[in-house]
View 1 (cartoon, helix red, strand yellow):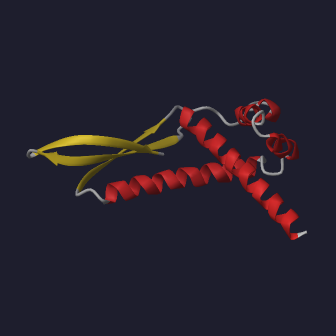
View 2: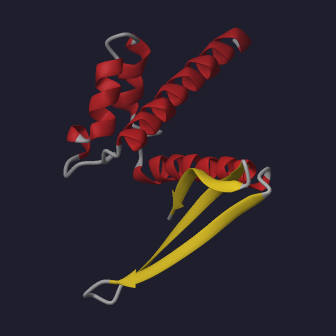
Length: 136
């Protein structure tokens, strides 16, 4: 009995990892996770494509237990927080950096704030911008 539970836990870990890596892929490509109909969403379609290589994934998709909007939103939020933490860690190692904030409001008076972090490195007494990060 214990080995059956352990196998099931390992299977669910693998399926959750496949879901997370699929979400990361879609986010990196700048694609929407959801569509007008859940069955036609990019996330479900990508998981169906990946299920060709792993038959357990099809059961995961049909179960829909971990594909709810709340869970996908929570995974997405954790991914974004991880990225921001990594950027802050990189920036904090630099001696110089710049933070630029720009706020704009659209016709509906919705305000949007764009924050840009620039890492600076001194090369032969001249400053050179090495990379920039946009954080929303």
